[in-house]
Length: 138
Image (cartoon, rainbow, N blue to C red; front, top):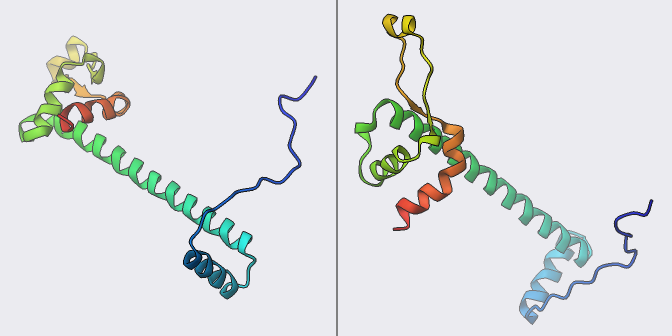
């Protein structure tokens, strides 16, 4: 069985076009940290990428919390929504796949078990970018 790809042993070259002032500043900073310029640039790129991942994680966490809060408010107190949030709720009403309809027996309904439909946060999260853009990018 042959491998899907053969590893390339040759080093990868990258060309950076820097002004004289930027190149001088980079060399000075690398010397201050007692690193060769290549290592210093690699560490700079790694730091930038890790910050980007942290920012994506923070954005995703914020999005998850927003979806969960919206689903809770829209399910329990839709009258509290105003402006574009109310428009977003109306868009959600049009999509039955976003809603969870509990199956309640007759005995449960007589006892008073909550049988109101509620927004399914997991389904809402899948449609969130499209719904948000349809409301806020109008």
